[in-house]
Amino acid sequence: MSAYPQIRAFGDTGFSVEFGEGIDRGVNAMVMALHAALRDAALPGVVETIPSFRALLVQYDPLVTSRAELEAKVRDMLPGLKAEASVGRLWSLPVCYDPELAPDLQEVAERCGLTPDDVVAKHCASRFFVYMLGFMPGLAYLGGLDEALHMPRRKEPRLKVPQSAVAIAESMSTIYPWESPGGWHLIGRTPLKLFDAARDEPILLAAGDEVTFRSVSRDDYAAMLAQVEAGRFDYDALKVAS
Image 1 (cartoon, helix red, strand yellow):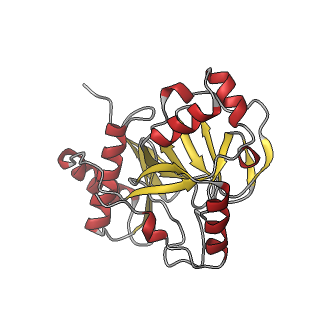
Image 2 (cartoon, helix red, strand yellow; image 1 turned 30 degrees about the vertical axis):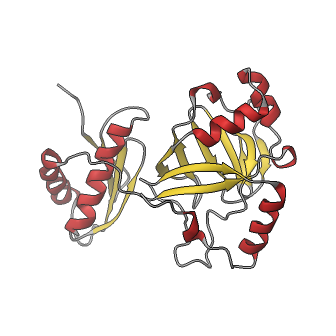
Image 3 (cartoon, helix red, strand yellow; image 1 turned 45 degrees about the vertical axis):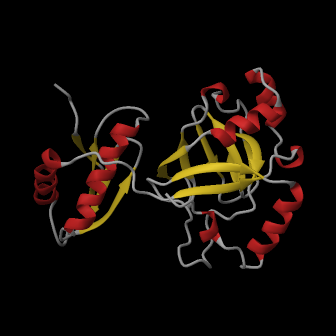
């Protein structure tokens, strides 16, 4: 008999509903099913629900509801939950893998027993799933990296990773939405902004979306970057019709 789901306290105004261990699409599908169910139910007092790889954080207003009352309602929902196929958007995101924008590409290739072109090909051939967002606004954890590219994080993290750097570590890829410290391996850069307060939807990716990458030349990268900086880039054109 499965020990999940489990409900654990999370501070004074929240609790976490856990569905399993590790990074698993089936487990995450149950997280997203509860996320959707609570959104649709619009229960009084629910402030926010935040999905992660394997759990859903439920935050509530204690002046409107109590943990006991809300937890009871959540428990009543659990038996009827069904893990459904992802209904998120599919994106095709441009990446420039030029060595000047990909400081770790050569090292990754050598450690994986591949050429840099092989690394690019495998990264572009992977279809990634957005499990969750975290660490900073707009940073998406993308699962689905080709096994040939799996490697641990850098032993010495960088103090500054450029905004929009594309990186890999373990079984995942990500794009840094801001300049920040980071320990992932930098294999390219996108001209896109993963977070832009000037857009109607400031955060580009959402949990449940899927992502593929396509290689672009340095000239195409520069042209798209100029459009992004001028606020004229059409982000809707990156969505792939399903």
